Image (cartoon, rainbow, N blue to C red; front, side):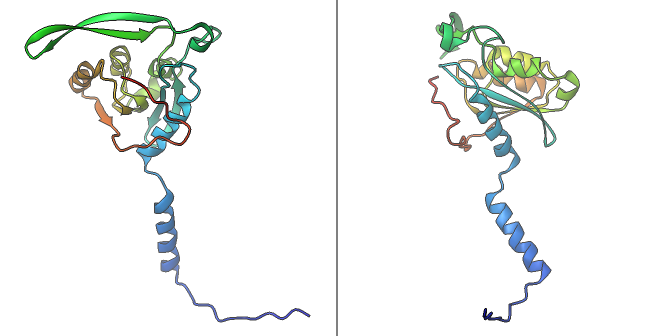
Length: 195
């Protein structure tokens, strides 16, 4: 024989249920910037570049339209298989009123995440869209993005080699250019890089 005890339950109004639900959702629900940057970082885990994993995401409104990461062209050996192809560039900068030469090294075996994103998305989808990218775009990618129809770039890690030029270009083009300073990448998706 099963004996069941029945207690009088406290009645909860619909308003109280809605408030409890909202409080629970808000405590665990990420804002849109964090959500899309998390996706960009997860996409970056596909990269096989030993120097820097970069992921990018194309978003229109709150709709995800495309993802891409840095890597060698399809069907070609990547940096882990064939080694990096390092190109050195010399750039002159004005520092404290004096011209100084700076050496920059770049791997030219890989196609950058932003470039892949532009290659694999349609121009019509890019018009008025936002690009989330794990790293501030380099000069070449910034030029391409500036001409792609996007209206905003959101990034997390800075790229000091080209930062001043890129910031100036985005201001000149009227493209919103934001850094998510306080963003924390998802576990297992973050790669330490040196500037």
